[in-house]
Length: 211
Ligand code: AMP
Image 1 (cartoon, rainbow, N blue to C red):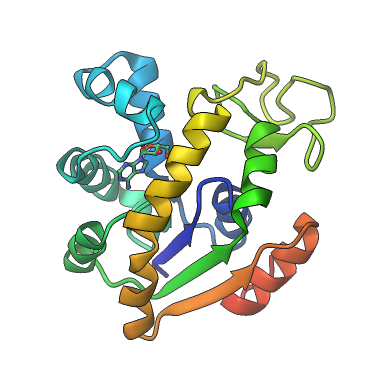
Image 2: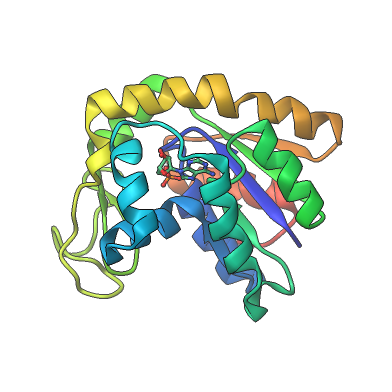
């Protein structure tokens, strides 16, 4: 199954992607994580995209396509992929349709004010990319990743001003994708709930997959 997760930054795509990955045993392709890894590794691509990401803007499509194509060539993608953060423009959605058949698009809807609260408390693991929230989803030991023990960090682009810019970019450039997939009959919408377990239940029902 090829699944696209759609939703604003901070809507919880990464968290749901992880649950679905475990249930279906197919990999998550997160373009945000791939870009952050390129920055951390100091590659040419990483140097090009760092300031764009810190400003809350979208990286040019061609750079993202290169990363996605490279990842899709790996054998673990053969049985299906969970796309997190890709596509983000209609142009990207059209390119993805040319590369493979998207089966389902899960749209996670969360109001902007809730997003701003969530992002201000978000902590991520720079090592394994696990995501936490200081209030809503804290790690067992404060500041330490449950999964790999690394010290948690705040993403550069989670600063309030950058989050506002990212939300604007989302509404302008990414939201129109909903109509694109609705027209294809692939869109399934879930309202994000205050409690993670409630959102997981709704996602599970929407996908018909036990999570
Ligand atoms: P994310 O972790 O998905 O929120 O992505 C973090 C940042 O990486 C975004 O704000 C963009 O600057 C960049 N990015 C991630 N995915 C894409 C994409 N599909 N197209 C363009 N830029 C992207």
